Image (cartoon, rainbow, N blue to C red):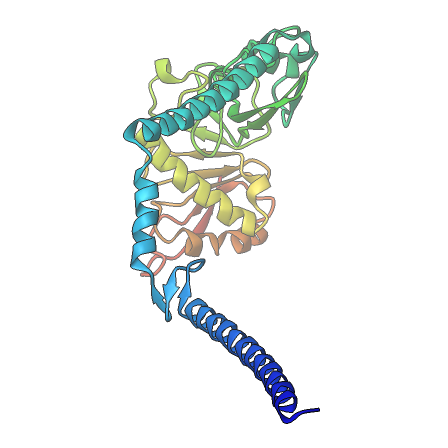
Amino acid sequence: MTKQQREEIDNLYNLSNNTVKKEKEEKKKAKEREKRIKQRKDEQKDQFDFDTETVIGMTNKNNQKIKQEKQTRMTKKQAKIMRKKKKIKKILKTIILLAIIIGGICFALVSPIFNITDIQVIGNNKINSDTIVSLSQIQTGQNIFRFNKNKVIKEIKTNAYVENAKIKRKIPSKIEITIEEREQNYNVEFLNGYAYINNQGYILEIAEQKLDLPVIMGITTPQEQVVAGNRLNDEDLEKLETVIQIMNICKSYELDKKVSSIDITNKNDYIMYMEEEKKTIHLGNDSNLTNKMLYVPAILKENQGKEGTIYLNGNINGDFKPRFREKV
């Protein structure tokens, strides 16, 4: 091989090596370029987060403006349509509810299921149940909702013995009437008979027969006003308070059953009569009644079987001394 040939071969070899080196360098540069591009993209991604619309932790004002623009895109007409739809839905719901209520009321008023089959009266002793039902004007077969409770109670209370009444509808077809009655506490002399009254002074009944109760004599209530359902006049009601006080004191000494009558004609001298003991007791006015009554049991025991009068109508706390005067 000549020297010239050897040099040509060496040149070709060096040229080949240089070409390979250049290709490697270009590939390396390409990889580095791609790496830098990728790194740059990653940095941009870290700085700009369009999903959350923030730039380095701060609010993206541009994106907020975009949102506001989107919200304002709804025209006034569209907003009006939305409000109208809501209003229509509300009206429809109200109409449906009213229709259900009205339908239920109509059904209750016309359905035979709610016709009264039984009227029960409870709490009555003096007044007959039939009388209460008659006063109520409620009838079987009548619709249970077709009467006014207050009006029925008012009619029932026209009976003087009725202090209060309650009406209860027991669905579907029963009525319960609860009565609270006034109690007879005293007889009051009236013409040729008696008027029965309670502790509130209500006149309950006019009758010829006397009840086994104390008789109150000397009332000032005019005869024309002594009618069942009325009350005694104010003067008699005031005296009645004293009578009740006297009877309560008598009860504490177990003497209340022995009191036959109390005369209230003179409020400065209440006169009590005990028929069983044959004693008339002058109590004076309504002062110191408790102290005056202290002497009664002892005087009754001391003068048992004797007819006469006990005088307690003086100042017990003063010089006055209670005394008994036997009838001659």
